[in-house]
Amino acid sequence: MRKTTAFVIALAAVAILAAQQQNKQPNPDLGFTDTPILPGLKWHVHDPARPHPPIVTPGATPYAPPSDAIVLFDGKDLSQWAHCASPDCGKIREATWPVKDGYFEVGKNAGDLITREKFGDVQLHIEFSEPPGITGTSQARGNSGVMLMHRYEIQVLDGYKNLTYADGQVGAIYGQWPPLANPSRPPGEWNVYDIVFEAPKFDGEKLVKPAYFTVFLNGVMMHNRKESMGPMVYRHVAHYVPQPAEDSLALQDHHNPVRYRNIWIRRLRQYDEPEK
Ligand code: MG
Figure 1 (cartoon, rainbow, N blue to C red):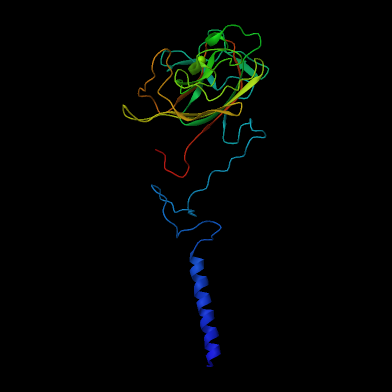
Figure 2 (spheres, rainbow, N blue to C red; figure 1 turned 90 degrees about the vertical axis):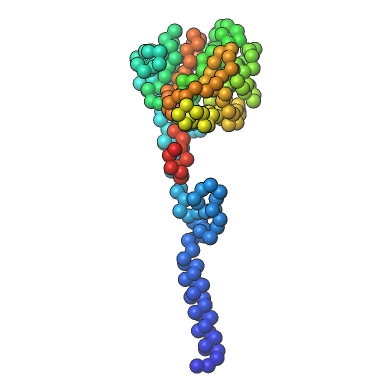
């Protein structure tokens, strides 16, 4: 065999070996396995085996529920809701807040409205309106509340030209943290809340992770993963007490005819880690 031929054969062999080696590596478009492991995780950086996020079809508008949302009110009825019929809400009764024209209104002394289904970590979309002609001042002006787990309140109040204490105004984590801004619309217009809530975690009696709120009102950030001090209390310092991992979302009856519409919720879970 001539030297040139031998050289060409050797080159081809090297090329084939290199190609075979390359074939052992995943398609670089899909990730890498020769990269470091991410701290505290089992995945490589750009790991091709890491599960992909579930496909979610978005709503037709940013306010419409995406495909994996639980629609709690679509303008028709309160079938997803109830009222407590015992102090611990172990017994419930039919919801009686009046529904009309695609919204419902806080009923006269009917008590808080609670979801029949219970939730932990969630993303919540809810719209509210302070009816025109509403009377009262400060905390008596259009007061209601979005109460995650029927405990942790984001204040609903007429925030348009209505002076009250900062940690009780619309958007506040009530009694704890004022919001970062006040983007209230005038009475009669619809305000939009988008809320991410991380439920507190307990190990028996011991709190191992507090609750956190991320809140937007009318597209403006109110809270950026703000730590809650505990369930809402009036004129006291909040503190945690052991509670169930999930509980009802509630809307507060503060005896003012606040209106609500377009309510949907998504359960949140890190899909590529085992459930804790
Ligand atoms: Mg309130």
